[in-house]
Figure (cartoon, rainbow, N blue to C red):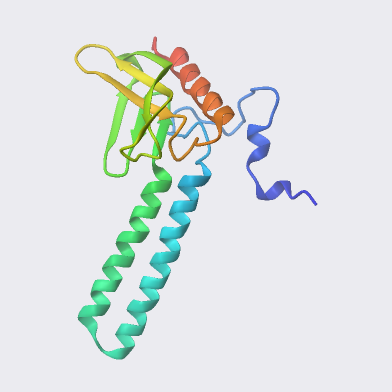
Length: 182
């Protein structure tokens, strides 16, 4: 029994690449969906946060307010980390490209990007120190500065999803080629 009103697949499965009527190129948007590893990790963190917050409530009823405050703060940090993990990735708009990490955010205007291309290079597996050979979408900046890996085929969004990586890389490259002049 298909339930099309529960998914966003209709926008991604369209054979013609016509922009949807509500698409606003001035707003920051992620040109791909978060991957299952990222969503699963955030869900586990939110589940852990719910247990910690339940423990904080039990501790409050027991009368130990300092322990409850500690549990409440740990739960709030877990919720904040889970939400930030869901925001991580590459975002594009008419103004430029934004790479959102867990603790940092870097924004590069399209005029300062000299090239966006896919290269074969060692990439980090799920953001861990271990590297494997893979593909990365690399942004090269004009002037002083080095290249920045935007997406890899082994990160939490694209692990075991090669087609999704290629589609996202092509979309970011298309945004760059459209907006680099102006």
